[in-house]
Each structure stands twice: as C-alpha cells, then as structure tokens.
Length: 172
Ligand SMILES: [Zn+2]
Image 1 (cartoon, helix red, strand yellow):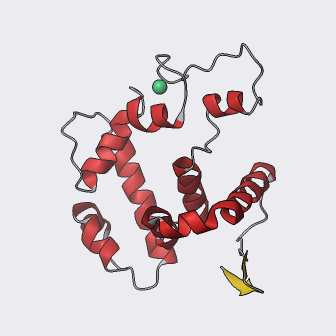
Image 2 (image 1 turned 180 degrees about the horizontal axis):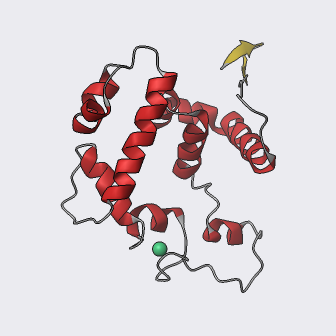
C-alpha cells in the first residue's frame, strides 16, 4: 500500500487493471488531498476505518470521495465549473432538489429506500418503510460473492451472510 521515504509517506497502489481516464483523475485528486490533509485524516477514526475495511479499492475511494464531498454530483460539477451556467442541477431521479451528495445519500425520494433497506439489513433500522428488496438482495449477493473470492477463509453461506452480516464481517 505504501512506504515511508525520508519522512514522507509514498502511496504504492497495485491495480488489477489499467486505470481509465476518470479513475486516473480521481486517484490524482485523492493523492493530492491525502498529502495535504493526511495529518488531519490520520486523527479521524472514520478515515482510518475506511482504509481498513475489506472492500474493493474503488469502493474505498468512492467512500473517501463521499466523505470529502468529492462525488461528481451536479452540484459539485457546477461548483467546479465543469457544467456550464444554466445547466439544470436538479436530481434526475426525483426532480425535487439539487443533486448533491447529501441529497443522493440522505434525502432523495428515489434513493433513500435503498439506503434504508441496506441499513435495516445491517441492523441500523431507521423505522421508515422501503420498497427496495430486490436492490438489497442484489447488494447482499454481490458483496458476498466478492468476499468469497477476495477474503481467504470467508466460507459463510449466502444464507448466513444475509441472516447475520455483522458476525461474518467481525470474523474477517
Ligand atoms: Zn433525488
């Protein structure tokens, strides 16, 4: 993942495939911010946990971008002047608010049922109704498949994974 050299941490990532244009941009942006804010983030347990979580590296990068509000939402693209003035910034999924990270992950009427379903599955029940069982099942299946392939010793059945993800994750 990296090493110290003359008192400076140098990241060394190994990618399974060649990074594509947008991914290279994200990586450069992330590394720049890591260099600039490494001290602060080193003290924040949330960022430490992101890097220690056994998920694909692109998922870690996405979570990091989300926590830093660097996801390419219409709001952020307008702030960075990637989108021209006058371009609609409304969320295309619900057409109710500007598309921002906060909107997409907390308030959007179209996506919030997915997050409620996932949080309910993980044991963080919010009490709100949801209608996204199929999306949740697909997410459960994909994560389980990924863990079976990537984590040595992960031998839980899909049933066990669905029934008690916390036990499975804590045993990693
Ligand atoms: Zn929306």
